[in-house]
Image 1 (tube, chains in turn yellow, purple):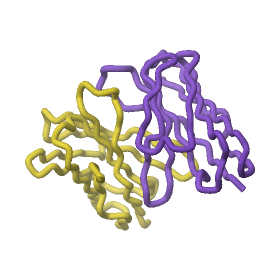
Image 2 (cartoon, helix red, strand yellow; image 1 turned 135 degrees about the vertical axis):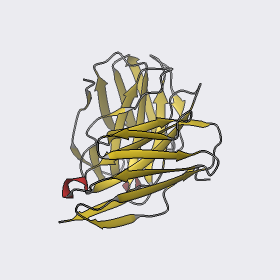
Image 3 (tube, one colour; image 1 turned 90 degrees about the vertical axis):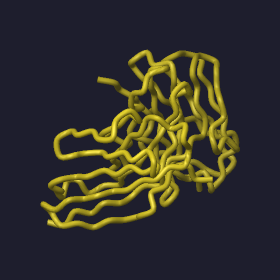
Length: 113
Length: 113
């Protein structure tokens, strides 16, 4: 039973355009959501997070949107740069737990120059 | 800045060997985690620990054990390595009872021949 789903294994965009990565979840107890970026042969790097009390969080070129009623979140990257090419993982956790994260399977983003 | 250090970046072992993967963090975090990452499967939790000498099974604990004798160190043990344990292994840590991102090490690429 996959609690966090990233339905697009890959995404390709042109440099300068917007990249939109999507994530769906099923567990209504999740209240904290994160995006990680991962390059090959490196550990995941934290990108941005959002608490369930918000519906939007911005950090520079990165914005995360949360739609709780649809159990959906998305990561927008504007403008996209070739250095953004990586695998992006969506993750979620529930308050009061052991800070366990449940990860999606990842979306490989390729930004073409 | 949090530093999570995994003892080896690349490791090659033989089937049936006992394998130890070491992880050390320098931020006095209570919670530590071991994941494996496989293409198309995302990050899957093997074991985690929320205190010294405490451990909890994750989603895929079979064939693995862990040790947490000191707060800063969390070891993953492959009791008798098998080829299906060839993978990227990732360690992470976080302060307990905080909704903060987990900090990851650079990973160990383990090949079992």
